[in-house]
Length: 333
Image (tube, rainbow, N blue to C red; front, top):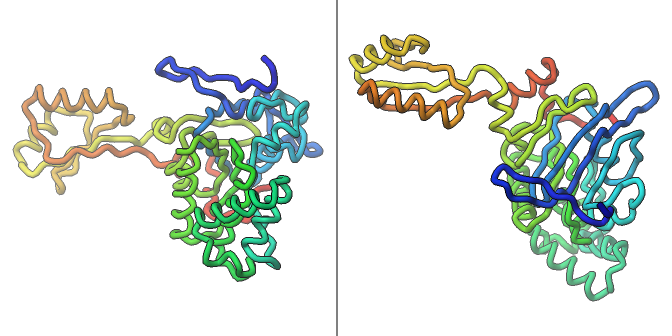
């Protein structure tokens, strides 16, 4: 397969989609510390992939390798159909990177930051001004464009940082903890921007310290621990790996509650609230089975809710109880 041709991935429905990022056996060590120990990834174009892990797990190392900032010690790595080792310039032409720390120059205005990026991308002057103006408007920064970036709030700086990343119209964007330190409103604004990018066909590789962020945004999540991928899948699939899921049935009729409780022996009782808790992995098949059983028994519950473990539970289980990192300052290396 030529390095310039993006590979494809077969989906569950039999269709194929281009693969934006692919790694096989990716390895990286610093001295005697192995940071990445045989990482396999296959990320579909036009999706959001989230890489989670404890502080020091190697998330930033993975981003640095995929974005050609450092070299791998072993394995095969392709980004946008190009080998990062043999065609780094082609990879760089296809990607944008927003790191943990802002690349914004606070001594110049927001507009000047944008025009500087346009110059770095060798855009003609008129085109550069047009692109800068469009992106400043898109990120709601037009009113602040003539002000020094040092006067911007944290959320504004992160929006400007991402706008600068988009000047080159990259197909793949690496966002390394893009919302760390932002207030909830600014974080939700950034989430909206990321969703818009993906709707437009951009692939987003996201590392984050906020498990809610991965749950909200990611099509696929991988948990990195001790240099390996501990598990990957959709948020729902990962949650089903952890025990504790259940279906809760609540009744208003005491007779109906007693009838259901006497019939469904595996359910836990909550007599005070007239509720039953049935162990379940939350799948559609199990839910249908419970509903069929209720219909067959002639029992009507007034309320049915499905409860699954959240990503915090998944993180704890997969990383051996490592502390869930809500606001890390920096991922090691």
